[in-house]
Length: 184
Image 1 (cartoon, rainbow, N blue to C red):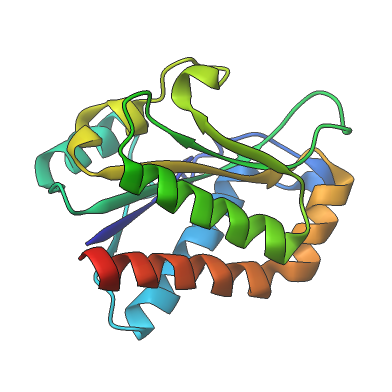
Image 2 (image 1 turned 120 degrees about the vertical axis):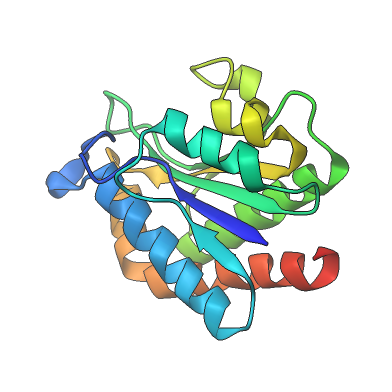
């Protein structure tokens, strides 16, 4: 089973970017489009409830995920400088080889399709938060990755995202389909 999580709920809890972009809206749209692709391919996928808090989502995941399940948390980066750019994927401090490989495959899919700079696969302790609940919290028994697709405060990243959305969507979906078929 693949669980797709929109990093921020529909109450506008995410960052704001150029041209009025809203992280919550973008994560929900991307999550839903990936889920639709996976379902059409026969992959079992579940999405979170946009009205629930992070704490509720973590509790829900903790009660249902199994060790072979995959949890992908989708986010967009933001920074006070419009020069900050690129894509990165986070794994837990105690990540498995499978998580590292999935993170690398997703990172490559995004950077190659969008043309964004790779900021690498990083452990959660290298994030601004030092610890990320979705990675080391309740669903820790599953295969967990957190994607920072691009900087919504970077005009260049947002333009690349808008221009290459379909290609990126297909590439991420392919990575997750392969993950489901090879390890599910």
